[in-house]
Length: 443
Image (cartoon, rainbow, N blue to C red; front, side, top):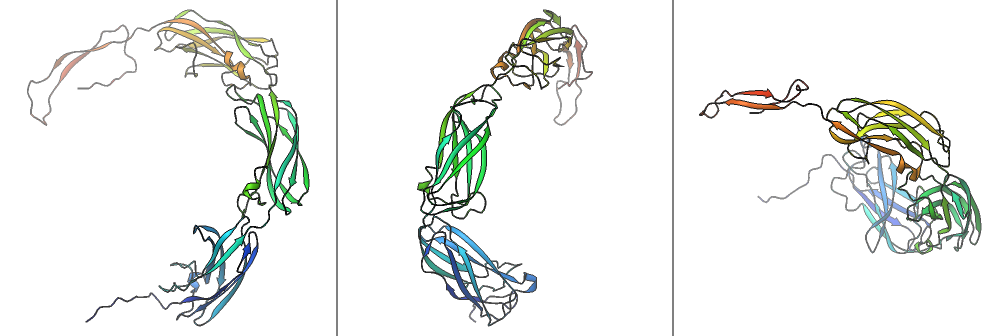
């Protein structure tokens, strides 16, 4: 007896076939196309079943004929059951992305959502679910937005507010009707950037027309000496348009790539520093020697040697012991003191004596560090570099314990896996008692 393979279906099934798929023979980028198709159920069952959602989805995909890449897709839902022998007609409009040019194709797939829980059940009869249309596309004229006449201050003080003006001209062959993004950016001499304004222009700009624009911007403050906001810089005005022809968020105006080179304009700007305070440790009084664990008194004075008052913010001064005169951080055990008062230029305040407990592990040469504005709450820029004074101190080590093992006794022979007794004696031959009450011994 001959054996032949056969298919087993889970239930009677539909067989949806595309009878017609029609659309334009050529198109222009950005154009709305009218597509029409007819689908007939030549199977044995009405689908989809109610438990399948009673709807099927047809998809239309725009494919680049040269590369095979998907450019855009659209989806359309058909509600209700398709009975055997009946058909449905669909007419839909789809809009091509702007900027397309070349050979493309439209691929229709019916019942594209078929799965175990949705769409129509067709068993294995899906080869007739697709149809294709060739679509040559020519590029439509597009706007060309140009930034012109950027003007603003030749110099400005960080933190101050200034007006920046510019003109946007549409030199393209068609109107610009939609949205584009406008940015005003500060570009310091090191090439970094700070966005001063970021907004959308929403409206229409006719071909050949121009729009005068002005925004008020605030120059940023340089927060630390490592930044490069102060000095020669540029203010750049940028226009950002859609990089593809089907932007759903962001800019919607599309420009050809070759027309985006004129979307910026700039002016030179010299950013000047604004007047800042400069907090410095003026004087420190501390003992020249002490023993580890001692509480030592430390007194100090803080002066504002800058040209602006240190006011409007609280700051803290830190006092601690360091092995280096140039500490990179503040250790645990540091004492913090709130600033006593605001300081006008040339004014000072005294703090202390502050009780600083030296670590019990300290020994040898060290430094009492006084660090004003330890949290860098006051903007000083280069003035941050003189916020520390280190005063030498010689720290005498505490007497220490010294544990020694003696009198070790163990059997000279033993059997593998057996327990043996080991005796030994631990003696503290140091000058001080052990701390902590326990330690670990290993045999």
